[in-house]
Amino acid sequence: MLSIHDLHVSVEDQPILKGLNLEIKAGEVHAIMGPNGSGKSTLCHILSGRPGFEVTSGSAEYDGKDLLDMEPEERAREGVFLAFQYPVEIPGITNLYFLKAAVNAARKHRGEEPMAAVPFLRMVRERAAMVELDESLLSRSLNVGFSGGEKKRNEIFQMLVLEPKLALLDETDSGLDIDALRIVAEGVNRLRSEGRAILLVTHYQRLLDYIIPDQVHVLSDGRIVRSGDKSLALKLEDQGYGWIETEASP
Amino acid sequence: MNTPKWLEQRRAEASARLAKRPAHARAEANKYTRYRALKAREQAPFEWGSHGVELSSFSDAMEKYGDRLRDTVGALATGAWADASLAGDHAVVVLTAASSGEPIRLSLRGLETGFSAPRLVILAEPGVERDLQIELVDEGVDHHLNLVVEADLAKGSQLRLTLLQDQSTIGFATTTLAARVGRDATFDGVWFDCGAQMARHDVQIDLVDSGATTKLSGLMLPRPGQHHDHHVHIRHSASNTHSDQLFKSLVAAKGRSVFSGCVEVCEGSQGCSADQLSRALLMGDGAEFDARPQLLISYDAVEASHGSSCGAMDDNALFFLRSRGLDPDEARFLMAQAFAGEVHERSSASDFIERSNSALSGLLSSMNP
Image (cartoon, rainbow over all chains, first blue to last red; front, side):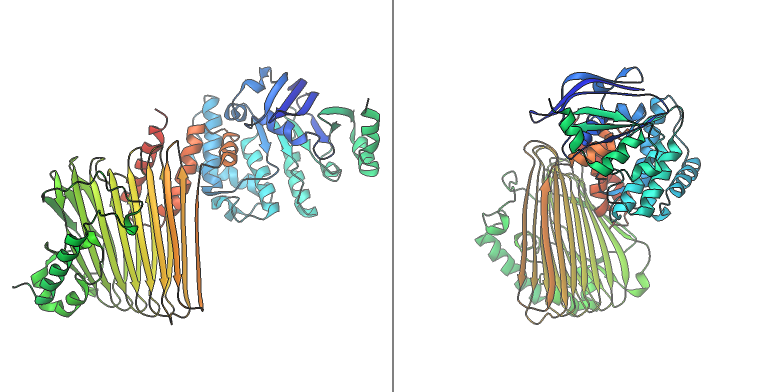
């Protein structure tokens, strides 16, 4: 589903990703871990099309298409979803209003009719319940006055509504208490299916107690330096990143 | 009926002030107002349309409300544009308990090239609640509408005004709205500026008795070459009075908007609160917003705040919406609508809101030809 080859990315002429390679197949969940500044969030941003990042070389192919050549909205309509590390607040735009626009933009892209109001409402209520998101938040301005946990749950709620094929979760677990972490993880697990892939960026192994990854990768200085199964995350939790960085240094 | 002496005297004083200093003279109060294009014009006809109320002539109203008129006409509204219209006729609206009901709609239409100076007096009797909707339009001619409204709100009355300025882009609008707000009375005002080459609104509110409250809002949408301007002065001259201001501008490239807001809290005005916020989104090169927030506080036991912000649309929020599948234009429109929505929701004039939204769409589409 996602094939990244020798990807180099700079921000303001500062190289961040320095030859990243990654393959994710449909149905798989991959976790990216790594020390601060290693390029984890940059990877999410570049895959979702955030402006301000320059691809200096390399490629990223998604479902057989050149992902890096697509505008952010095209990527979204093709099924790429980014759960933001810091969800934005937009006063005056309600969750429901913008989600209806987003759902219908994707439907239009697929050549489908816009979703009628009643089934749309039924669907969003169901999905909100899955992440225990209070229904009153649906008609409030996007993330305005939400707690940190509510904002993160709102991201996962949007993901469940939009049903992406490739979900990029950028430190979705940061700032969550144990209960909220479990709820968010359950929401993510609901999305797991044969036709979907998930890329999780996290600092902590604890999220992987709830979302069991197929593969764990360690990103260091802009490259993946170690890959393994869930046991790699446990080892990192126990020993930190020092041993990997030592091994990886030339 | 002969013109009362007090009115004759006020007209003479206004005339003398104008002779000394014309309305568009260089002065601190006109610092940001673009008066260059405003030339002297001959008097020209305009049309009053009214719905939901009967306009009384000044002479009829004098018989019954002489004392209140004397305390109101030419006594509340100050400034050169108010002086410039004092010589003309006045239409009087008396809001009584018996007249309560549907919103009052007044439509002022400039018919030919020139200048007109409609003047309105509103007397609200105790406990009356009413919505007043005023629209300023023209026939696509270079017409300068100079409207003056003086309102006296008695104890416990509530007047909710929405003023839509939707003149052609060669028209001019200057308005002066002055309200004296009595004990436990409320004056709420919302201004939507969509058209005109230049529009300036002077708003003067005096909260004269305990419990008097005012909530003022404005949305200015100047397109290239247009100038929209609000000058607000709120005076808290009694204890436990409250004011709230929210003025927003969405300024296209080479458009200009101005907000000058002053809150004056007089000595002894204990327990007052005053909030003032002006915000502007600059949508292109050469867009300009001038803000002049002022607090004049002469007493300690008050709560007062003011804030002003100006900048481009939030790139992070735009990216968020695009990352959910929305076109950049659609995302910008949603953001602009959300920005304007906070002012729209303060008015109950749904067709005015629609026209303001339509002007907003026009402004955004003019940027993406």
